[in-house]
Image (cartoon, rainbow, N blue to C red; front, side):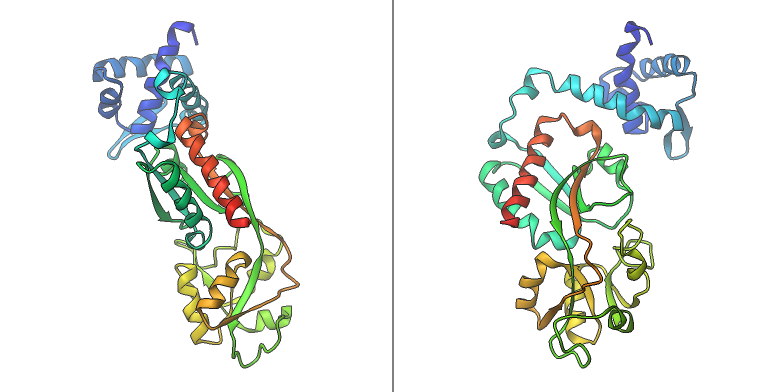
Length: 305
């Protein structure tokens, strides 16, 4: 690519993100004819068609998807060097940040984050959405969502991440469970009892399955009687039945105070769980996004205290 062709990079990024030539032209403030001319030049440079027109808009080719993260990151880096981006002041920020997370964080991390946000950025807002386990790379790339907060897995190598918390699993059952009388459960008992699990979107197994955990084999042998859409849905089911369920240990104490439940130690499930925030690489140098990630890290530290 010649130096004179570098001006084509923002056009490539705009088309990739908008999935539409007309919208890309409007975003860039140029004519659709100019966008089409740039596409022809880009195709010559990369020796690839790059974008395929279809009934639902523009579809990027595999090569376009491969080069997009690098080109988008370069556009972001240049944009954030401009004067209006250099001096980010949280108290003057009016944007809305989006988080997709597991429901359990609505009782642990997110309340701490809300307190920090209200104090430091009173004009900004946050919208949280339930994390359903799907691939949200496109939502992060197009800025429909800023962060995913969930357990570290081997499934998100295409995203940037930072570990902010560490947790472990503990089993819950109702206090007057007819068989589980002690404060510990054996593997044999674990596999004999019926379970309530946190379900995954469009999957028939629990959230913890297929996440690369050491004890995945044991988790996969559970007799699942009830698949719940959230942690809070699991708890009253466990309280009203003989079913048992695994939840993060940091949340057990406050849940057992609200529901008539008790925690059981599981010596056969000792692997710690790391919780991380994930974001798209194109957002790494955005001053407001960087500040928001820092705020999430601080919220996690406060909760852990």
